[in-house]
Length: 76
Image (cartoon, rainbow, N blue to C red; front, side, top):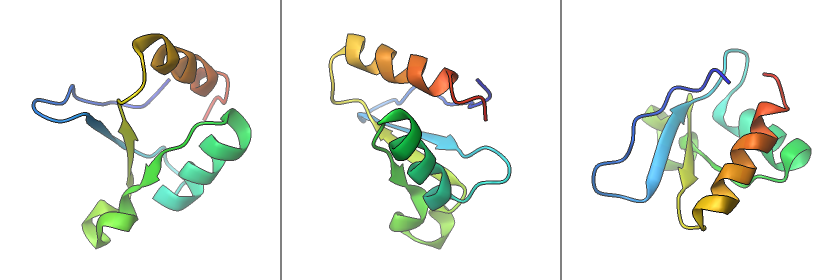
């Protein structure tokens, strides 16, 4: 779907660059309003976080897979 992420080594978060044309806040808003997915805008962690979004991997794997399928439908 265009988001490139690396598996976390020692945490339960994934950081992903936001698609072109989005800020971390605007992308988080699209995810929430159009797909029902909660993600944290990277800018909330400081200026260096802008351009990234953080996903928590604290839900069961099936729920995470469901979120990924919803994201695929957004076509960003």
